[in-house]
Length: 83
Image (cartoon, rainbow, N blue to C red; front, side, top):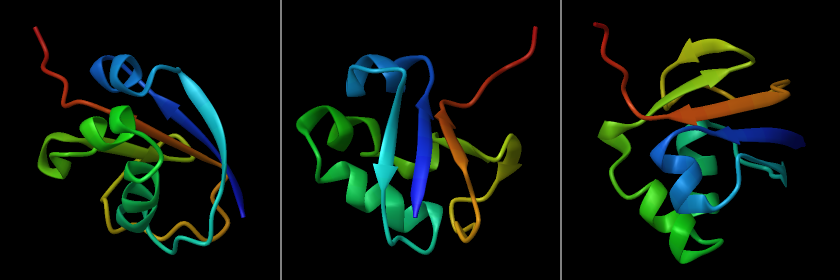
């Protein structure tokens, strides 16, 4: 499947791009993170601490174990605080 992957804030800085199109067979967000981590040192740094990441699957907040079947867009971002 083909996914549009978006990176925000510090993740964008580590990966070096705000978005990329990814071809994958990953079944879950977590599995895709493992694939992406192997792409470059920047990707590995971005996904080094999964507990500090949040994601949105087709613009809906999701768990890292969320399935990717039928997903078109996946966004990764650090936790946000209000204020």
